[in-house]
Image (cartoon, rainbow, N blue to C red; front, top):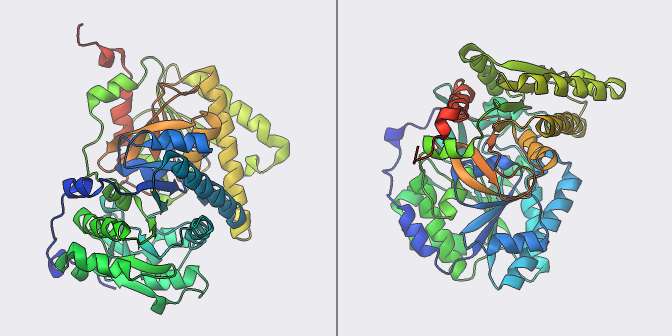
Length: 480
């Protein structure tokens, strides 16, 4: 399967983010149910909730932003638990929207390398919407993550790595112990993940040719024709492609269509009227990072890219490494002492050095998908207990969490973040910086770093931005 060569594609049709912002007037607010925290890495200035009571969602709706995130963390859950959580969150969102007198649309944000509970999550959202008198007409499937090189061309999803594009089904992510798959063509992937319930012939492909040569009205008509939860698989190789589709989505919704979006991070950015923005500036970063102690990096992700990033960080910068051995964590008789020893070592090191708390790099899997997911949950819970104890004993200048499940558990279990704001990215289009709105982590910069993004040097690049920001000289006031 040959790479999609840029010269062979139709010319990009320019669609500005300002056009989308104009079209957002009176549009449905988008509730982004994020199956791990990394979906925020392409946006800024949006609320993030890790609780989903009606009062919390009403708070988010009152911020008057185009949308908000709810961290469901369902990628770390079994299918049954994920369905139950999605049902609870979707119901609370619809109840809050009714009380606030607004309409909402749902985005089920998941992994741009196609890992996650699909079609389960869009099925549940559709069921809840129908139960509230709002039946869903269609599912917009747009997993592209432009900044990270995850593109869809000709119905095939591609993953960039080390300078080349690989069909997603041939990438390391397709061999995931929990969410593995074989298909690279989205229509075939839908058939595979639905165990044949949704045949590939039931998935409509919206090609780059249709997007770039069409108009908002022609695309709107395609979307408006969807019925009964039919799936529309969207090509995207550029943010302009997604903005063109979003304009059509908004137009279709204005004329009565009800759509659920199953998407990667780039679609969310387009749907809220934002464009790719530069990372958070050094001055703003220095105002957020605390002077004094060094930072704490927490690594749970086991993908090969994360392991290479750790090696590159070690080559570039000295740090105190503290490892939690996965085999020991699985031994109930030794696990707690092992965590306690790791906490003591990290706490002792923080005043004088960057600390990297990581799991052992050999991936341990179970006998099946459920067993592998249970191992991942137990390891992430141990990491979170360790981080909570470290931060309580010695507050670091910042916390970086590497890996989706890891970053969700650290945010909620270790740092007690309930409501937060996305402040922006630390690298172009990737690696999200949060600031807690309240609670024990208020004022502590929290960096959400997906396991599968960036290049080998990206983790070191992020630390190279954060460590200087914690130095006393970086905190000189404007009047000094």
